[in-house]
Length: 356
Image (cartoon, rainbow, N blue to C red; front, top):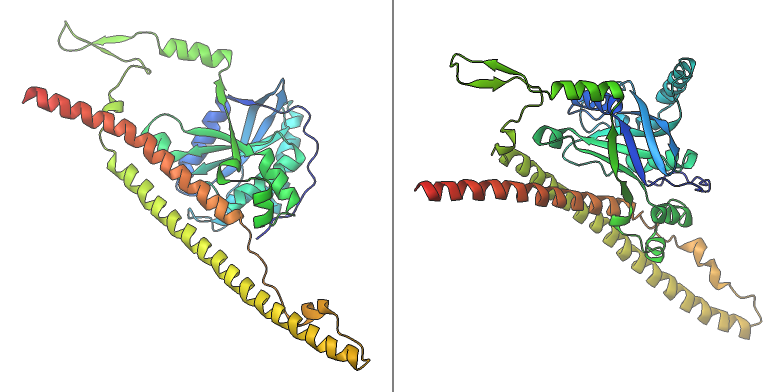
């Protein structure tokens, strides 16, 4: 389904990185973690200056009715729903009353194992970047965050993708995709992000990182009570569930890809069949027109084939691009996590060989 085409304003001062306030990070991770596995999203507020997008505030959108599963489309398209548009306007008005920067600069969303490529994501970014070309989406992968450090990525639609959208009228025909050299790697572009702490937060972290020891029953041993004390969680070998889910979702995406390819192949067969009928009709019309000219009778226009035949409409190639991008995302995650897991297993194997 094609989304509406919007004339984008001229991009005068593009941003090349994003700075996220630590308070914003805590808010969005708390929101997405508490709602997991249901998809949720919220609005990002801030400003862009000196080619840097500064995200200083955020608030969540209220959950839609009946959004209790991870497959809910209502939450995926929440930034564009009428109820949330009114809610957003009310929140921005209240924030301005207390002198908080209330300039929308994008939105955040939760994802499960990196599965965030969808039509709703594209629709949301097209609408946001039409209003502010520097708008971004922050994707928080709750599952990956539970396995390691916080998984937070910043994306926006690439200029190449927006040009193809504008040239094809939002339909993403094969001709427009080939003409603009658009591939699944060109849908989104990632922006580097950094986390900024306030002075009070920095002082608190320095206080937490100061050594604090308590004496155990053994007077010669001490245990650190620091909140940032080193731990051995990184040596955890419970990696199978994460990799299994990634492989499972990868296989599902491959099935979706073949289903999409089957739909396009069916269109090509239908088109070839209709074009063959049209050519036969044109040849027959030309023969009849030759006879009509000899008999001084009016001829039939060859363009009248449009009244007798209906050429099938080409399906949008956007779904194919999104599925391909999602497959690439799963493959990258498997490669990244498998390399770490392999290092751990080789280390354990070498340790066992030494003891044996």
